[in-house]
Structures are given as structure tokens and as C-alpha cells.
Image 1: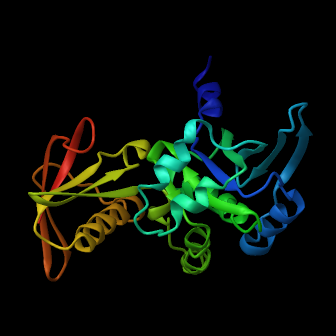
Image 2: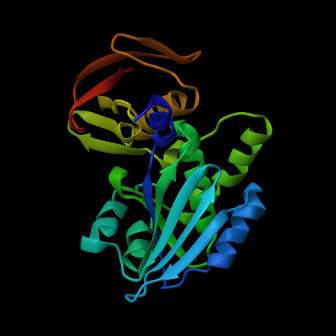
Length: 267
């Protein structure tokens, strides 16, 4: 194989997500219309197929990425989505809402000519945003991150992404890609990320602090945003000025709440 062949066959990032549905319906025409309406993008080479078990597959190209969205007429297996909904402390009724889902739409990338990971994530988010506009959506589920997202929260990012694009800026709603967990014990509050590893970054942890958990969330969210959207590269021993009043130190060591090494954020 020549170097030109290798370059042509090189593939970009291929994330996977799931839209949880309140009933077994997938309005494909409405979905494709939302992509065009909100993002001024045309899904091309669309192909629909129906399988004997009731699954419906829709494949299409969008901005150099080939997607396949598959309606699966049953809940997410092994109650995984329901269990992970318990981790969403920002959505009061998460467990009740997710427990009632009847079907899912899997969102996968099968070919990707975009080699910039963040741009792939942005295109993927646009597709999921269009799906979340379906009237029968229950939640967005990123299973590798154990992340359940309330539909309106997901949709709220549309205008922010549009505004960033109008100013030629990169904006990825990181809360749709990285879960920030909060843990409390007798030593105080701790926080950790789940999802940065999926994007080839080290996960972050803040350990055992006697501060409000919202502060831990805000610090981690700020750093995640800078890593993903501002291309900030943080390493062991770095001192980071997050704003005029907040300076943190970075230490790399074995994870406490996350497997493998993590970057500890010392406040």
C-alpha cells in the first residue's frame, strides 16, 4: 500500500451515542428537516432500510462524515441507562423519565474523512441536536461516559454553537461529552471527569475539599472547556491561572475515582 493509499484510508474519530425515546417512532423527514433548518446543512446520499425485527436504519453523509442512525424498538439493555441516570444530579426527574423509555436511536459514525477530533464532535453534536428536537425524545445517552442528558439541556446549546460559528470560533458543549462526577465523604467533596479519556486526554480529579460542590463542578468544567475548545495542554507540575482570582496546580498520579493516571487539580 502506498503512502497516498494510507492517507486516503485514514479515518477520524468515531463516537457513539443513543437517543432514548418515549415510543417506537422515528420521524426521519422531520429529523432531516431540522438539520437543514438549524444548521443550514444538507444530509446527502441518504438511504433508509427496514429490517425484519422492526429496526430502521438511516445512513447519510454530513460534512465529510457518514452517519448511521438506527431505530431499535426496545429499551437500552440491562437497565444501564436507568442506572446511569442516577448519576445526573442536575436533572431532578432523570430516573423517572429514563425509566419510561421504550426505544432508542443509536447514532454512529461509519466513515469519517474529518481528521480533527473536535470538529467531528461538533458535527456529531449537530446531528444529535436535530434528533433531540423529535417530539418523542426522552434523553441523550453517552454510554461510555455514563452520561445521561435532559433533552432541553441538550437543545439549549444550539444557539450558543450558532453564535460561535458566526464569529468563526470553535465551540463544543463539553457537558454533552464529559460527565463531571461529585463525591462526598467524611474528608470533604471530590470531583472527577469521565469522558476525557475517550478524547485521548487524561481525566481530571479534585480531591477532598471543604468547599461547595458547585465550585468543584465549575473549576472542572472550566478546565475541560479550555482543554477541548481552547486546545490547552496541561501537564504535571503546571500552574494554571483560570481567572484573576483562581490559580491551580496540576499533579499527575494514579486515579482515586478514575482508573489509571489522572491529573489532580490542586486548589
